[in-house]
Image 1 (cartoon, protein in one colour):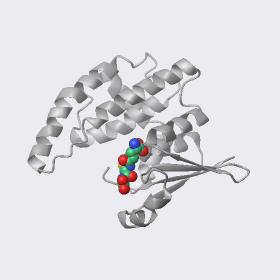
Image 2 (cartoon, protein in one colour):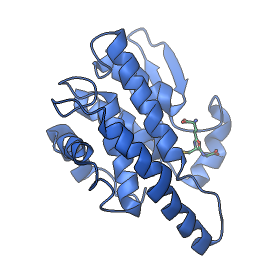
Image 3 (cartoon, protein in one colour):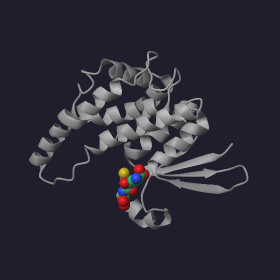
Image 4 (tube, helix red, strand yellow):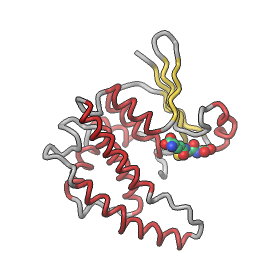
Length: 204
Ligand SMILES: N[C@@H](CCC(=O)N[C@@H](CS)C(=O)NCC(=O)O)C(=O)O
């Protein structure tokens, strides 16, 4: 059984989906969280000088270092069976994850002026983010998930992304009832609910 070390900061951010997959699959991992000061002294040790990074050490002691959040959670999803049962279901899992990532990127606004930033966030939420949610609503299957009756990384990515969207607008899913139900279904999975109850409380 390999051992896992997940390196990130004191936040959910780009590491939270990986943490959820570990919890869901009942897999032990080291959840290493750097402060800003610690990071400045460690940065040079990491492949692309950014986090998250996952270290996987196999039974022979060989360590593989995986940077890039998307590569990390897809690797874990495949490893533990949350990317669908075949290549086509995997493709569906991936295109939904990509689509969601595109939507989330609309909220990465670099404007420094707080008032202008608030207005830009509101514009993004009411425009492309809401439009994107309406389109995603069409991909929820009758079973309540995106890919199959088994929860997938696409469902996890959606619920983790919704935690962020709800920081801006608590009622963001009110106009997309299937997505709202999907989100509740994921948040009520005992392993996810259990993790959320005990995880370090962070702003984002
Ligand atoms: N595309 C990369 C982006 C990684 C990234 O932007 N990481 C940020 C935190 S979310 C980081 O390491 N910031 C610290 C730095 O750049 O020094 C991924 O998805 O993993």
